[in-house]
Image 1 (tube, one colour):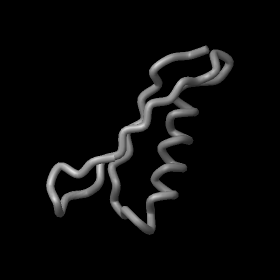
Image 2: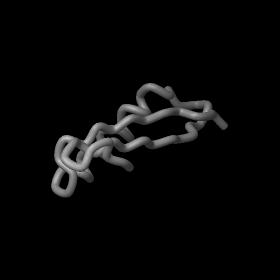
Image 3: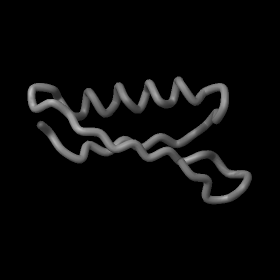
Image 4: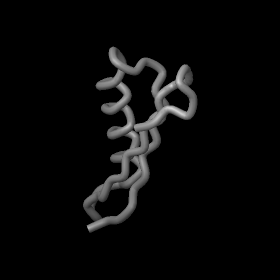
Length: 56
């Protein structure tokens, strides 16, 4: 979690590993939505990026 400028929106980078039996895009979107919802009160407008780094 970082902020490029003191007044700009928060930028959140989440890296995840998914199970091979799951669709990576679906999981990444669900994680992004959950993180965005969790930050809605404390960091409204946060830009959340989710990267799937591996599958196991």
